[in-house]
Image (cartoon, rainbow, N blue to C red; front, top):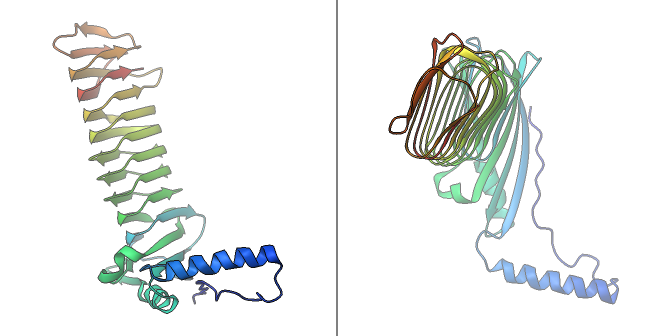
Length: 306
């Protein structure tokens, strides 16, 4: 079952005859603005909300695709999947906006036990319509989300999480399981994660906080800041072409450190044993008994190890 509610611009001048002079003045301005906007394409708006429920797929895997709009996934103590989709569209008239909202569809299908949810918007309308998704799922469900133009937020999951966005930030929090995040032109933010974390961004900063496990994070243009509560056996690799790198390690840790900059400065607040002197922008050494690799690389920026 789904519940829908729609709204668009109401007819002007309701109750005008009994209005006070001040109210009449305001109404007159409103009428003038509506008349002015009526000649502008895509000036009318329509909205619709739908709510749906799905059975949890047999494979324990959910894939979500939303070309235009925000997508939020929340892990909860539940056995089914609840979806709320808010659709919004603009057009040259109220009726046209209503039709556009109707054309935006949430399509579901299950193949080999994997449930897929896709927001489909007619190609000719994509610039003037979008849909925001909020999906509430069992915590143990494996999640994969892709978006072209919209933010992604995933939290409260106890399984593998994957997120892909072309033009929108990605935020992941309270995850126990491997995390794989990629965005082209926005930032990546992960907090309170546990597992193997892979983060990629072409033009955006990467911020990773209170992580337990290994990290592999790379961006072309932007800051990388990471704070670890526990270092995984695969260690840490952080690399950026143009930006700073800041890494905060646990107090008690056994790692082999390898830091390198092409044009920048290396700063470390940690005491390195068997330290190799900084040579052409490179510094290597050991913290504790060593063993787990820590590799930090930047072409133009500063590396700070804390």
